[in-house]
Length: 177
Image (cartoon, rainbow, N blue to C red):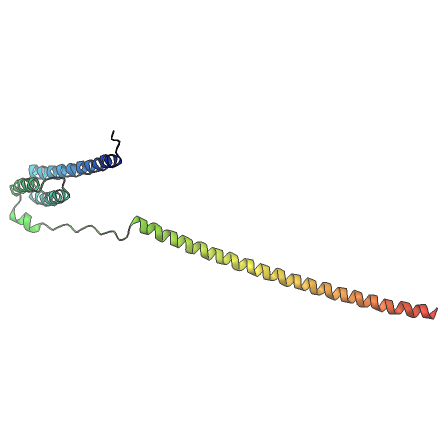
């Protein structure tokens, strides 16, 4: 095992590339097998369609550097020659190029970010509702306390007035005696 940090990283990246290259080469073999199977069945339209798909894969592999461009050209030539042995002019004319796959807009990261934003907005709305409810309860409690304090003050004033009235009556009684 390497001791140098850059060499350790190089080993990891080489392994990733090796696995990717292996998958691409396997895909190329599968594509050429489909062409050979269609030719063996004598199905010209399927053979031509499979050959076109295989040629596209060969070009992609060459552009990624999985296989050399000359090897891709040689393989494409052999596949097309094989397909042309059973494909007729009608098969080639009837061939419709497959529609490209729909491009994915955005990414997982962007989707996760949108989900987090939505969750935060929802949480913020819930918090606002709870805050509003708390403020209403605090307002009611303050009003109730003010009312109780007012009633207590009124009762105290009445008690003081009653006491004052008693106090005035008491000296009058004392003077009457």
